[in-house]
Length: 238
Image (cartoon, rainbow, N blue to C red):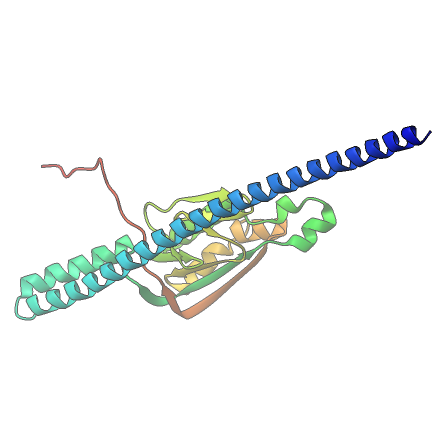
């Protein structure tokens, strides 16, 4: 009888030891996996930081070079009317390309998601601002005479891409979230009336439930484009 009890006791002890070893191995494996993930994340974070530092340094050098170039142009054109004309044409070209910060009067349009109404109707998608809405808004502003446009600090230029990226919108390869503040320089009355036409885009968005606001302003500042123009296939006609 005692032998049976000893055997049973030894069996229970062995089972407990086996269970404890399994738990320990699983814990070690999970800890190893977490450590591996943490190490990988740290490496990726360090790499991103290094790239950002390089970008900030290059951009700072570019801005410094632009200032120096502008000073040099001013010295060259002081006593040369032809050079002054070329300088004026260059400044206009830079403005059209979006490479300079601009100020002027115009309108400020705000588009925002209407999440409250969407939750009430179980159809939140119809009450969100989509990339197509912003593209149409830019076209409406251009048709009304807008000379320069920005969205949440991103300058709209000829090669600007506007796409949907999950629950945000990507502009100039930068993720932008609601509310979307669109600034446009131009004649305020024309811009405002162009957007508020009967059956126009603002009326259409309001009908769908998107929150919109259009206001005129005499003091709009639109930042310059900070991206890079890269034309690989275009060539001048000789």
